[in-house]
Image (cartoon, rainbow, N blue to C red; front, side, top):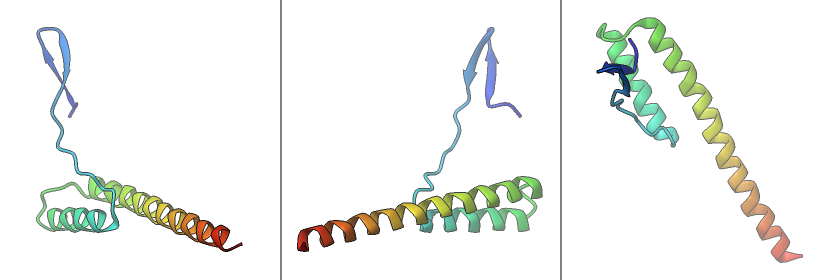
Length: 82
């Protein structure tokens, strides 16, 4: 299904519900919802698999960003001592 509706020869984007997956907690809750929908037969297994993969990639990015921040904080503390 396309995310664009045809209205009098104009292509208008449909409103899409979005979820901000910017924390590990939010990604985990989102995946729990996907798993529940899969178990209830409300979501296609291929879509669930794709969402699982994308959530895994997102979690890796979140973890790397958190590590970067911690490293920067430590470097700042070290520079202040010497």
